[in-house]
Length: 467
Image (cartoon, rainbow, N blue to C red; front, side, top):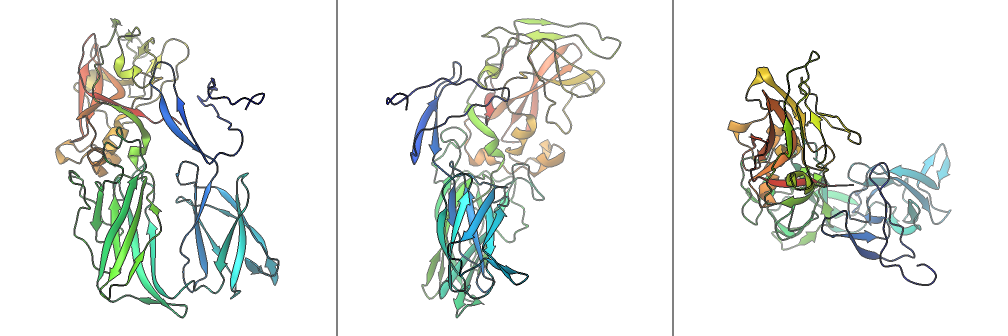
């Protein structure tokens, strides 16, 4: 608000980190803004007022009271300091050396969660929780560790897997149902029917997630929390893959990530209990922001090669004009650059000012001529995906089994129904006397290369998420 008038539009300039901040006046619960950078189309973003604090089901008997913190965009807020104090000085969080502890700081874990462990049987304890600069919020904890009698359903696990893990690019949530009687947890021996009440994928719709937000593609029932999802699954049906379990402890795997679920357990006696919302951590799909079905690469308006120099560099260069580099410009890349390659797969070197080239995200770059090929990178300022990022969401195929973590790929791009078969990477190699660009087939993990000297091909383009 400026001079009593509402400001509906404003220009911002990014700083040296490419960042800018929108400071909202007042305290609106939610504001939808449209952001336009350069000649790109406007993109909508939702700005929320404050962190969200969710009280989860307590662990009975042990008197542990878990909470989860989400940021304004419903993303997990890990590593965040949370201040907790009792609202009544007659109650305490803990007893330390005979003294009552009335206030304590907690730090959220990788799932955005922290636990308050109350000492003794104090009955209801009101606590005030403060995150960041927002106002305190009041919650009531049952200090006797027994919130109610009846069925109790707890979901754990579901960690982030952007970088993969022991079982590859997947995450598993463990779901356990017990019965509470007089403050005691009792196991369930009846057969249990498990139902997915809701599933919501929190990724860019109609682009990175090209299905209905409630689609179940990418979920699979597994037999343990260390099970490995079959990476050859095509994920082409809106259902949970695998055999539905009937035990009191079951395991649900997700290869998509950033998905919020709610489950219901029903006993043979028709008793039911429904979980609170549970959100899987982010997966490799969260690295991407936009997707384009196809784009010619059309390199380059200027292209020349030279002989190898004494230090091993080939002084070959390419550069483009505003229309010669659409695969890069889709991802906000500058086309007016000059790049030379260097030996040893150490990345490209920009020869003019303003570029900070990165090393390619390879374990072993594929080379048609190992003795004369030198890997580099193109579109240094763009947000084009790396080969490793694209392999992470590709379907597993033993004939295209790249080394390293990419071998654990689970086909997340197929679960998301990407509207392309192959995508350009931001990677280039120099073989002999010609530049070649890499693409990755997400349906198989096959890595291909294409000559880029005034040539054209039509893989799609997937841009990395900015910010």
